Amino acid sequence: MDFLGAHSPEMLPGNRRLPDGVIEAPHGTTIVAATFPGGVVLAGDRRATMGHMIAQRDIEKVFPADEYSAVGIAGTAGLAVEMVKLFQLELEHFEKVEGATLSLEGKANRLSTMIRSNLGMAMQGLAVVPLFAGYDEAKEKGRIFSYDVTGGRSEEHGFAATGSGSIFARGSMKKLYRDDLTEQQATTLVVQALYDAADDDSATGGPDLYRRIFPIVTVITDEGFRRLSEAESSELARAITERRMEQPDGPRAALL
Amino acid sequence: MSTPFYVSPQQAMADRAEYARKGIARGRSLVVLQYADGIVFVGENPSRALHKFSEIYDRIGFAAAGKYNEYENLRIGGVRYADLRGYTYDRDDVTARGLANVYAQTLGTIFSSAGEKPYEVELVVAEVGATAAGDQIYRLPHDGSIVDEHGSVAVGGNAEQISTFLDQRHQDGMTLAEALKLAVQALSSQANGADKAIPAERLEVAVLDRTRAQQRKFKRIRGRQLARLLEADVPAAAQADAVSNDEAPEDEAE
Image (cartoon, rainbow over all chains, first blue to last red; front, top):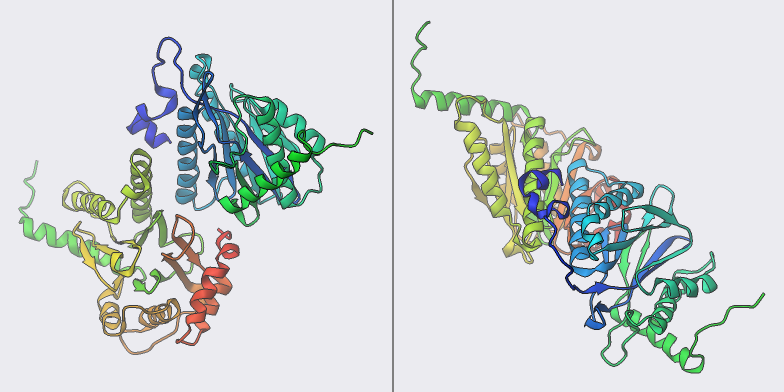
């Protein structure tokens, strides 16, 4: 990072002159995460929107940051993808030069600084608001960090969501989350939440059975990062849509 | 002011080369061998923290003999070069050949500039390909030349003797256990015939394993896994499988 700053400063996000006026660029929408005993799941829908138009149906918004952590991005897709690339580079570079990986807190703090350096762009409507999830090897549990546009970082307990559909996704998870979920149940939970977000938010895409576009679901445990294969995530989405044919609003929580 | 003595360029270069060679010869040797599924690095190194072998990029590994601070400097330079390349262009655009060229330039410039002392290091840059035919191994001596090696290469103290030993015995398509055994034999053999086997805890071993599922193919082999490989009877195809199955837990020890 320092080396990049000294040698090719124009490649770093913070050092660019801001363009005048407002431009339209594809925006990513909903990312959700939930912890379970032994790890954490992070998932995202596949839609990118530009104003009222769907810019892309099959965008990927969840990336591994390194072996034990992942980032899901909401906000301006182009800037967010670049931020993730730079973040991945930094973690890998640190690991190779120092011979040890950064702590999960260290990674979360680094991401916070990167978001803050994008504040100028965010003021012009090009915000990037990621969700960071990882397995903390020292504490032996999954942890989630959420951010605001100014780089403010806060650790979330249980579940979290970001992006335009996050309000609906959070409401959904609030009613369905328990702290003794299995890995399988946690992946179902996040896809349910994405379904609910897509149900009520026009910028969030639901599972597209005809085009075979399903949410990206990733799991991080002590065995590292794993992305569910297409077969697994399509099975998950199919099970949920089938259940919703009988009960369109999804599972109901107890009243008392 | 006194006039400095005239020293012919030939003499000056010969002196510098001798100085560097002596420095390198003081260090312990290490070997780099091709085996069926990749490239293995083996060396004697009592320290667990100061590595002789390290990862540069996805498919590229680095080995060095000589002075620690000098090759550490070059290693970090290499990691920076590779990461910057990969970020600017694409991960596939980082190649061992490009990296070896950068190292050759650096070493060559330092060697021939009168103001600096020559680096007392000898490097090996290796890249594992999709098949054995795609493997590349470059040896970079102290003076900035590049030697394209095949099969096996040794650098450091008894490099010549060890590489003769290896050349006679190394075959293509050896298993990891076979290659490792051969490497340890080569490193243990002494000029005076008094062989002493190097114990597992003094060995530093790393592989670039093309069968590894991750993008980054570099992996250190240590502890139980190393002991198991060393004990393995040579025709041991099953052992090679055991390595890939076991890699997750051992990998995180770093």
